[in-house]
Length: 319
Image (cartoon, one colour):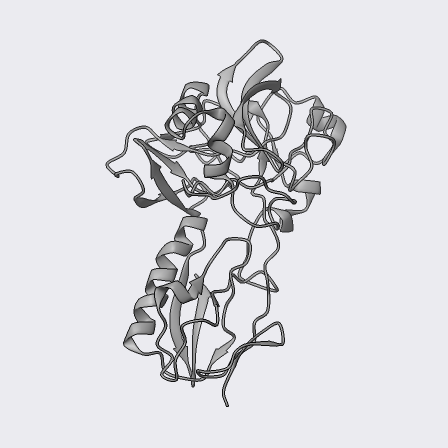
């Protein structure tokens, strides 16, 4: 009898044999930037895009029902990017907010209120006073997603918003950054946002954004700077090598002997995306449709995949 396995356990007693679930990818946080980088005249955003102001963030949370509940709509589900209980998370808005943590104003990583999986911070361009600027924050143990004031020398994540959009609510688009990296976008209400944290190393005019690793040097900055969590760039990016390939997970229910799957049989979430290392059948037309649907939805998480044939196997790979 053929069967489906996951982590060595049989989860489906019918259908074709599928094996090789591996490479659950680790959280990748994007880069941290100080506030001076987000307001630099050289522009961290490409044409027709900008770092959101406090007003832009407020428009988003108002559309989602207010700061006290908006966190549920924007946080990714599960426990790879957020520690338990990840209160209320549904990610229904598809903004894919993760607990990326931050770097504090003294240049130290992972201090209280900056621990990855506990909190996610995002800059606005709005200044509060000479030392401080407005930011947005989401928490692992709350549905709150709202603004506050913090030191300009803190290192936080950055999202971008389009000046104006032709998309309708819920539609997906793309954004190409200053480095040439491509990001998925999502329209929420009348606003189009990139749906993953920024990973750019250059301003629009091509000027590099300095990477600043030393704590004292970071704390002394009055111009733009960036860094990766713990100064380790493996914490910033999902790459195509090693154990970080995204994967598409087919859950056991709904598989028949011809490997025809119903859409409800598939689960894909950013913290637990699975890739078949091998699939020992030619996919049916129905399965091809489902794979294409999965590829489309994975783009919401900034994960671009393609399905192709290699010898006797069908594979989904990051592109």
